[in-house]
Amino acid sequence: MRMRHGAPGVIWSAVMKPSRIVGPGHHESAGKRRSGKTRHGNRWLTNALGTAAMAAARTKDTTYLGARYRRLAPRLGKKKAIVAIQHSILVAVWHMLTNEVDYTDLGGDYFARLDPELAMRRIVRQANTLGFTVRFDPIQAA
Image (tube, rainbow, N blue to C red; front, side, top):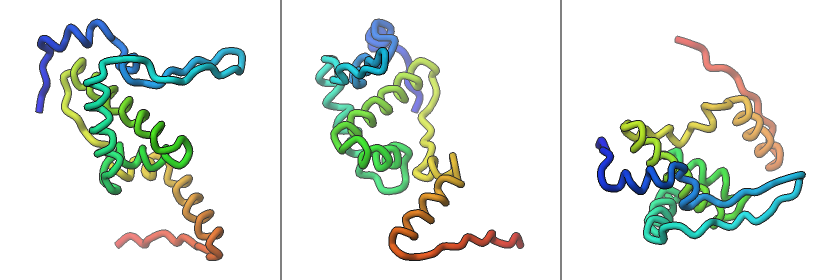
């Protein structure tokens, strides 16, 4: 599905940065962290993005957004992770509209493919915590 600029293009040109609509505020200076509250933006867009983010978070290991939610939720909490997914969706839509490209999902295994050594260390650490030892042997090529 290809999206074209039309009347909504006025909204995007006025905003220019999608994070101003729903992204959390981040202000850090001299090592001091200040308010991280989200800004007041378009409430209908925020509600629609919230619904889409919750749906994306419920996807199993098939989508990038679901994998991103599962990585962020233990560290940030569920609600802040949902806001981060809203921001990710909004940034993706902004790039699709400005560059006139289709959406391509990176896949649920994106983070494992990004750094396989880190994924293996995490698996070994989890197995050691459960009381198991793990040894990885490479698969012989046919």
